[in-house]
Image 1 (spheres, rainbow, N blue to C red):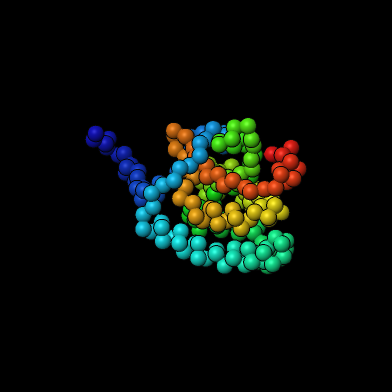
Image 2: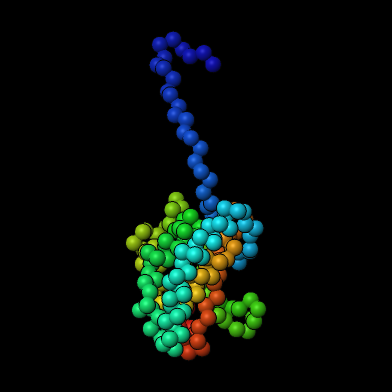
Length: 198
């Protein structure tokens, strides 16, 4: 439409470059309505990355296994660098390219409905999301707690190797969300001791 005489110049509209698509979730953050992620087909780049990570993390796992064999399974945490929150966050970035939230849950075993088990879960939410509701301090505190339990229970190396080896990915869209669940191989004593807290 023609502009009236004496009108100021049109406001300049700034055109921004399109942002990279970031997976977000339409569900509220505290929603637990999700399903288990499924194995995905790998392209060459993804397969190469997985092989690289397996080689990168393998020496620590081998040293821990060797120490465990020499000392009857005890003291392996002293033979290698302990897993902490930063190490767990770095693993998420190495594997998935983002700082995914990790938590420990106790839930019903899908193969044995009358039995409950402990799982380390890689959630579909990650720190770099705009809608992520934890501060970095809160996020790192949670990652430290998870890593601490994995170390205390003696399953840290097994969890790291399973995360590296899996072809599953956490994701979320407007339809639903999927988490990657790593079963924890715990003794009956540990499960009974910690069951009331999960």
